[in-house]
Structure formats: structure tokens, C-alpha cells
Amino acid sequence: MPVFLEARQLVTPGDLIAEGEYSAGENTFIENGKIYAARVGIVEYEAKRVNVVALKAFYVPRVGDIVIGTITEVGFNGWTVDINSPYVALLRASDVLSRPFKPQKDDLPQVLDAGDLVVAKIFSYDRTHDPQLTVAEPGLGKITRGQIVKITPTKIPRVIGRKGSMISMIKQETGCNIILGLNGVVLITGKTLEDEQLAMRAILKIEQESHTSGLTDRITQMLREEKTKREENKE
Amino acid sequence: MNDKPEKLIDKKGLRLDGRKSDELRPVKLEVGVISNADGSAYIEQGKNKILAAVYGPREVHPKHLALQDRTVLKCRYHMAPFSVQERKSPAPSRREIELSKVIRESLEPAVFTEYYPRTMVDVFIEVLQADGGTRCASITAAALALADSGIPMRDLVVACAAGKVENTIVLDLMDTEDKVGSADVPVALMPNLNAVTLLQMDGILSREEFETAVNMALEGCKKIYAIQKEALKTKYMNISEEIKEEAEE
Image 1 (cartoon, rainbow over the protein chains, first blue to last red):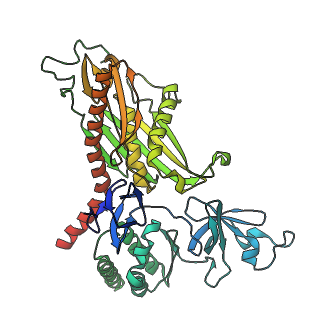
Image 2: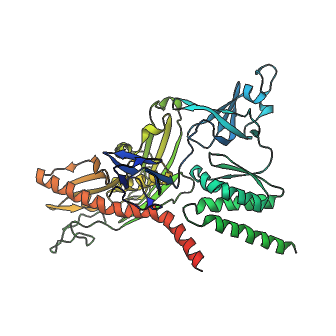
Image 3: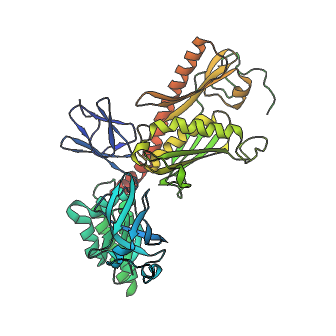
């Protein structure tokens, strides 16, 4: 038998998953033609590819990803941004100002200061250089209002759901706008604080129970129950 | 308590705490006990009580220690002042510095250090109560904490010691046996890849005795590995079970 485990089984690092014609996907590795798990996670087979969906991991930058970061330091011609990853990101002043940066004229802390949050895109990154961010696109830039939730980055796909089913459901039920940073930081902006908190709770619940089935239904149920409770309290 | 006992093994072949020669002390493992850390684990092996916490991968400070092609793994083994009978100075002793290195070297082969260059992983091991074989228990807990933190690993690492007490080879020595006995052989193993990452010997053994001791320690490792794996899975299994119960209600 080339496969040693059923789909959706929990594995720990070093567990033998498959052998032979399968290829090693995410969070797996090959040793002597055998495929082993590299992280704690759930096995998933995708045609002839074996993946382990990690239950906990950190964010590794990829060019083109949308992330939400915190400004940690104002430098001479840009900012350093904490993007919840092993590497700190750089954001250049000329990129934010969308014109050449003049040190004698522009005051950087007035544009963005330490502690500010930004939605940004990874502009460049490789093994030898720290990631560089850009905000020169519609929808990117400084965050002025809303709530922030942090979850394990690998669980972002679960929050999105199949073809966006989960995220669109939460948006619809709570009436909030949600931006998912692929680094595991989520921005929720709604009409009221209560709406935002409800969406926050839903996302945290998804993180907790990401490896179980029938999650979308349970989240819908939870949101509706909370909403009726709130209506009752108002009366 | 520090008195030397007359006999370490009685007529029936039982040891001071009533164990047989090839019997482990009871092992209890728990994962995810420190919420501030990225990964953590707690081990109780007999009277040993040890905490392990993992932070990272994160930026290297000071920066010049960073390696361009791989992660720096840092290990700190530390014994609490109250972990032993006589107060231990909290400053790192020669022994603790050595054990930190030994533990680091036994964990490093299991970690994919080349995946995240220019970063650092910190492993903190705090011995709360010591009763012999802390280095082995520390390795077992630290490997679990590493796996819990989500760092990609080739395999878990599990460690166990065997030694010689009154001319008998015994498994998993406790403090008195370690001090009065004549030899101690700690072994760390990556069970799935079947690779030994630590092998030390303190004392004198013949070639045959050494082989018996190593094989006995390896068997002990495999037994602990089963518990270790279970502990890692339990953290997530509990949540799935809770949901199942809710659904049934």
C-alpha cells in the first residue's frame, strides 16, 4: 500500500504518510522515497499530492500577499513593519508618498508613526532579503478604524472557506467589512462595536475548531443565536 | 535522604522505588501549557518536573549572530534554585552550560534549520524539580514544545537513559541510582527515522554491558515516544471531542 493514513487524520512530525507514486506537498518531506509529515496537522490527498494542513504555523512572506502590519520604527527613508513573521518588513517613504522622498521637506512620523497599522502588499522577498512592502494600490494603506484579530496564519484559508463561503457568510450576518491579512491578522470594520465584536468571536471560534467538520453551519448558528439574544436584550 | 542506601536492588530484583530493572518511571506529558510562548510542553518523569518553552523563529539579536543559510537554534537549560535538596545558585553553572549545548545538538538534527535563514529559535528549559535523568526528560519535553510551536521537523526527539547499578543494567536511573551506581548512558532517538542524536556514557562499562544498556535505553525511548505522540495529539483531539459532544446533545 502506498498510502498509510486516511484523509483528514491527525499527524505529528515524523509520521509516515505515503510512499511510491505520491508527491510531497505542503508540510511534508521525502526521505528514502517515503513521505513524512513535518508539522502537526491534518493529512489531505489532492490527486497524487500529499499535503499536511498545519494546525499551527507562522507566516512566511510571499510576493503578492496582502498583509496587515504594525509600524515598529520610523527610519531615515522609510518604516520597519512587524508583519507577524520571522522577518520584519520594510516600507519605503517614496512608496507611501507616491513621489520622490525629500528628507528636508517630508516629516515621516506625520505620515505614519510607530504603532500605526497598515494594509500592505508584499512587493519583494527572497531568502536573502527581508520583505519589502507597497501600499501603492487601491485598498491598501493606513488603517483608521476597526478591530484587529490575530489568528494562526495557516487558518486563514479556513476563515475564507470553500470559494469564500465562510467569509461571505460572516460578512452578511454581521454586516461588517473584513480584510484578511495572509499573515494571520484580520481587520474588521462594522457599523457598531457590537457587530465587530460578534465577527471577532466568530473568527476566533473558527481558529479554535478549524480541524473539525461542519464548521460553517455551526458558525452561522452561533451568529444567529447571538443576534436574537441581542434583539431580546434591547427589548 | 542523602544517606547512601545499603542496597539499590533487593533480593527480588526490585529497585529502590519498586521498579523492575527494565521499567520506566511513570511519565506524564502535557503540551501548550505556556500561552505566552509559541510552543510549550511540561513533563513529569518520576519526581522530575520540567517545563520547556519555544519562541520563534524570530529576528536574531544581536544581529551578527545570524546565519545566512539557516536558523540559529538557541537552548537554555536551567535548574530552578529550589529544584534540588540544597539550594542551587540560579547563575548558570558549568554543568548547565554543557547540558544546554548537548540538548541543542540533540534537537538540531530534527529541525529543518535551512528553511528560515537569518532567524533564531529559542528553547528554554526550566527544571522545577530534579531527580536524575533531567537531560533526557528535557529533550523529550523540548522536542514536543518545538513541534507545538509549528516549526517544521523531520521527526520528534525522545530521550531515555540506562545505566549500571550493582552489576545490573537498569533503565531510567533516578537520582540516587545515578549517584551511587557505576554508569549512566543517556540516549536520544528520532524514532521514525531511527537515528540516534545523543549518546553519552558516564562511568565504566564493558562492551557487552554498553550494548545492553544502549538497547535498553532505545526500548525505553520507544515507550516514551508513544506517550509523547499521544500528548501532542490530545491537545487537538480534546477540541474535536468537545464539539462531537455538543452536537450529540
